[in-house]
Amino acid sequence: MMKIVIAPDSFKESLSAADVATCIENGFSEVFPDSEYIKIPLADGGEGTVDVLVDALNGQRQNQTVRGPIKGAVNAVWALLDDGQSKTALIEIAAASGLDLITPEQRDPLIATSFGTGQSILQALDLGVQKILIGLGGSATNDGGAGILQALGGKLLDAQGSELPVGGAALANLASIDLTDLDKRCANVEFIVACDVSNPLTGENGASAIFGPQKGATAEMVELLDNALSHFADIAEKTTHINHQQSVGFGAAGGAPLGLSLAFNIQIKAGIDMVLDILNVDELLQGADLVISGEGMMDNQTLNGKAPYGIAQRAVQRGIPVIAIAGSLGTEVDALYDSMGSIFGTVRSPQSLPQVLDEADKNLTRTARNVAATLAMGNKLSIK
Image 1 (cartoon, rainbow, N blue to C red):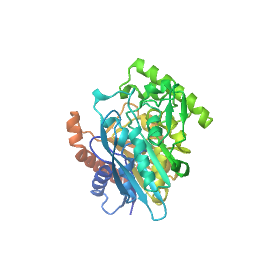
Image 2 (cartoon, rainbow, N blue to C red):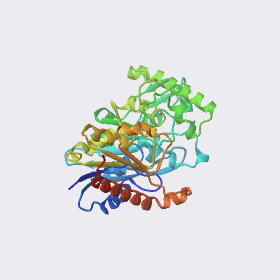
Image 3 (cartoon, one colour):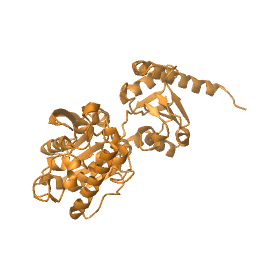
Image 4 (cartoon, helix red, strand yellow):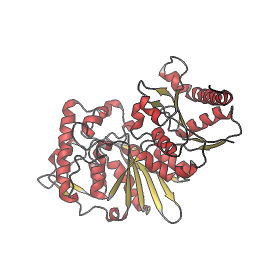
């Protein structure tokens, strides 16, 4: 009997990671009904990470009304894991400060704030957590995590000693940082930042230049915001004794690791590695004959810390073959073949996007069934 591990990410806008895993199992079980199937829905530390981990680890979802990224309030959901001995909070910056919380017309990285994420962290501290895991992905902000720091009691002051308003542009006027009123509990919490990018805080590959445009930044805004983050890093150096302008990963979520580093002793980990470790994937892979992964869109960008590549690396280290099934394939997938034996797309013919999204489950199940049938056929063939 084969042991098949199914460990995909979600197909964005159509299927959750759990739904993807179920479709693949349904398709494969038509051909291999007696196989053992281990389903491990995955996420890479960004959006969807809380859902994946809270379901797998029987956590409790927490709801809180917090400040939104631009204006008004939003309902932010995070998860609490309590094993009876310690408590861990799972927080996504996208839940309170995400791009999906506002319309394209509302996007304004000059004033967008991560303050609401800081409020979620405060709620976690109120519940007595000893560890916080935060996923950085999908943010609407470019404030260097300043809003988080402000929510936790840190003060960002101008030359006149007045507190700065929220948002990335205001950081250009920063003169000093006062942590006197920072929540004292921050010092006693283990804080892990899950990050799926390696971009530095500033420069041509920094937060503003690379991610600012998708948050509404014009070329002029990018320059202004990059200078503001550079200035923030220079002032923060007086407190942290490290200038983080070129620190790996500090460009994630509009530079959020900088503000977090002023409040916590942070550890930055690749998001997918954090998720795989929490789910004890190495143990689940023992004795596996095949790993099947996938995500909505796969190309060579999948190599940059995405879930299918992360699980494939672990499988390859153990000599386990990997098959990937994606909603669609990009024009460049060659580099993926070093860790994935075969890669399949599911779209059956030219279709409109709404139709593709609507038929995602049927297309995926059918493709999985065809992949399984091909494997079964291969077992009967003798290649000379």
